[in-house]
Length: 609
Image (tube, rainbow, N blue to C red; front, side, top):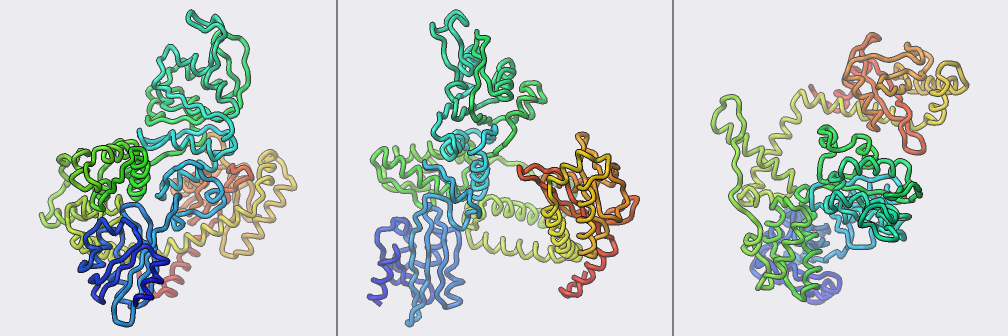
């Protein structure tokens, strides 16, 4: 056993030996502080309690029930990711081996595939540990090598300037300047000269040689306009011209000079609402809104909080020469706080606790001293009809459990925020999931499940059809809609071949959309009943799915009726090499075909609706 233990310690950071009930017989490690923060990891404790105290998932009971070696990842609420391997040994005991996975970037399990994420990463620390922020990172990677204007949206403190600097750092303008401008911090009478510069004699206090503006200073780089919603309307007019023409005219000058820049704007306001109120120019809004990127608030990425805490702990422990740690309960409390100030507030809180903590471990009591965990606001549930009291209590309880699990995705944190024990939370959530599963397989939902199976197949057919239609042929045909061309013949033959090969498609057609959002038939298979150039007018359930396809989302309609019959139609966008949607392809299926497919699936899956 000692040789086995020594061998494992050369690989792992921490070993815990338990009996077959999970009671800890021995706990030894190589200095990983995570296990030193909980008493349950000591001899006499329970491996189940260790999991509950340290990790977001509890797997020990399941592992011991199968009595076989197993390895998996455990996510710690203190930050580190742990590789855990459980070994059953001949005496009936277990060895639980833990290894911290040191990774300064998002977890491999969370990474989305594709070359962008692997090849482009900021060279400075930028903590991304949640699915919402990985989506943000993907969008940042897409814009960092182009000159398109970017609009960063999100609450105050979510990290918009850090995101802007990351775009600069990752992109082909990284060797150029990054010029930040806080539009809300510059007096209104100075902001125009700050942005566009001025020449000698432009105004009374102008410097003798004039001054370059921020746009000129950002040449070959990035200009970051923070709080862009604070710009006065008269400055918005001039900013619009610079964005359109990429030329700058200093105040007092009649000479313009070109600038090669990418503009990244940021705001925590709703520019759309400001446009409606006349406080922001509509044309400028659309110029800025080329690539909008929304940074989610911290409360919507709870799984990132432990990693941010560890990042800021390391930063301020180093800065102030301290060695402060957070207990698991303190981390839990930070995770269930709402963080109105977002990442900025979290960083300030960690810094304050590092400075003011008189003990090496920050616990729940210390966190409560610095965060306003006051009385919770109360609001009565809206119930507009009478029901049995017990039924009402159960309804509110189910809503609260769903809300807690949806936000925190952890039984442990949900139990803490609802102030119940974890076993109680686990039991109630299991009961709720069983109730949902039973409802899911009601006759109505069984039919919906079968229909979605058919819809998936129909979506795939439309997507494949759209992929094999050359976008350039569609574009050429659009330019010559009023006469027969080789493109119209080629496309008609291709669509007819698809229709005949599939055998179950009634019609295959291509629609384009006019500026006033009318659907126009461009070309179809040889049997289609609408003439090229004719407008299609149909029911909303069909037209809405078609409009969604023009916005890039493939979809399938419910059964609908128009003047040609009863149908189910699948739509997919036809996209050119630059990513523009030039048209949509539609595949019509008869109601009779759909009903026969439903019947076939029922028999195949032995489902009775």
